Image (tube, rainbow, N blue to C red; front, side, top):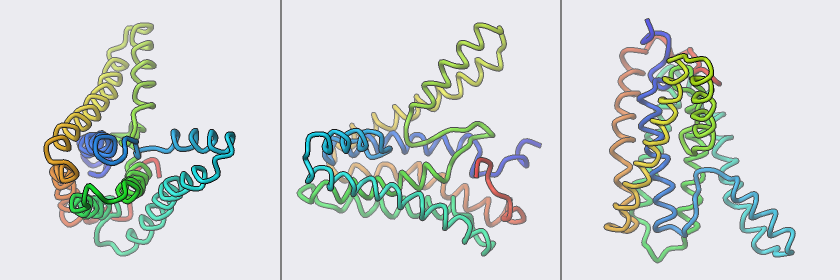
Length: 235
C-alpha cells in the first residue's frame, strides 16, 4: 500500500542517495574548487551584504553570479517539471539525475588550473535544481543539499520524544539523523577522493547518481508508467 502511495522519486532511499551527493558536492567545491560551499546561498547573501556595506562593488558584482545561477536553477527545474509531465515519457526528476551525471562528467575534465568559478557556478545550478525538485521523502519535508533543517528536526523530535515518551518521534529523529550521517559520508568521500585524484575525484559522485537514475527510469518506463500525471508531494 505504501509503495503505491508514494512515487519512486519521493521514496526515502532516493533522497538518501541524493543527500549523500549533496554532501559530496560540498566536500568537492571546498576541497579543490575554491574553498567555498555551493549547495546553498545564505553565505553568499551575507558576503554580498558585507561587500555592499564596505563599498566593495567588485566583490558585490561577483557574488551576483552564483546567486543568479542558483535562481536560474530553480526557474529551469520548475518550468521543466511541468513541460515534461505533459509528454508522458519520463519525469523531470529522472531527467535531472541524468543532467547531474553529465555535469559531473564534464566537471571532472576541467583542469585544476581553470578558474574555480566555472565549477562553482555549475554546482550552484545543479544543487538548486536538486533542492527544488526533491522536496519530500515518504511524506517528510526535507532538503538534500544542506543540513540546517535536519539539525532542527533532530532537536524537535528528540524533545517531543522525551516529553511524550512516543517512539514515533524518536523514529522521525532517527530519520533526520540518518540523512545528516549520509551528508557527512558524502563529504568524507569527496575529501578523500579529491585529495587523491584532485578535480577528477568528482566522478565518484556518479555511482549514487547512476543508481538513483536507473531506479527512477525503471519506475517511469515500467512500474509507474500509468502515474505520470501524479505530481510529487510538496510541489
